[in-house]
Image 1 (cartoon, rainbow, N blue to C red):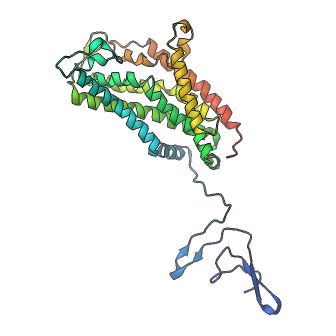
Image 2: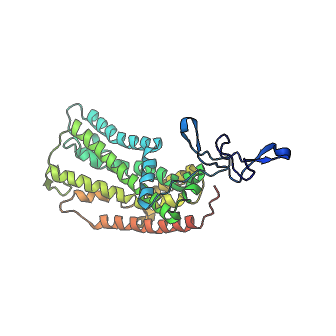
Image 3: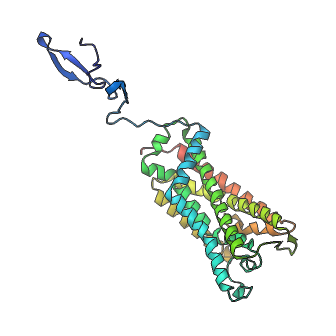
Length: 338
């Protein structure tokens, strides 16, 4: 073998070459220029895969925009934490249904004192109202807390795990990655809302009678139209979380700790909810993101009262635009070192 040949056959790729010594004796192997050798033949002619040496960056799967979104959705909804959140959300309507059933188990059709979330007293007459009661019970706290977990972990979790810089190697870029993270969070908002609605619908149909729906306006509508109102309300509730999702994503760009971003989101949620209940601050209430959350009840009027519904959607759009732009400005100028 000449001194310029790289070992083949008996010499495995990546081990370098033998340099001829005095008298033609073969000297020690000298490391080649690359830590990754070529594919070589193994036993029986089988191809041996290349093995990366130490310090080599693992390959990054390159996705286009839709491929990156599909990958992010799979990763998010396969996490045990996400599944646990959805299970907890699905359990809330069941607990409400069981509590109402036990409370009215003596044959009475009304709840004592009318306490509890909106629409609770109508559940015994029509199980479909369990959907509205469950959404009214979960929207102020449970649903946004789940959104705070997912949105807070979107960027900060990747940074803390050391995978953020590898994601940015792909041609998607920072802006597209941020949009994909936000779209994934919005998808979680919709899925979480539908899980609550579906669980409530199943529990209500199982434990209570269902049929014609009496609207808030006192005008009855058919069961089929009532189901359409359920779907519309679920979509509106999911859209009501869009502003808070953008806020959580912005908080996620400020830190490398997913736990810190989640805690900040939950703390901010509780603070704003308290501010929204103080009468002396009623001047700022219309500008707080949760102020119009329960306006979905206007979809149960006949005809539908749209005023506060449009105010809610408009306010969420403003929050999404402002904090989405803030997240973009922060993330695109951030020094990614981990």
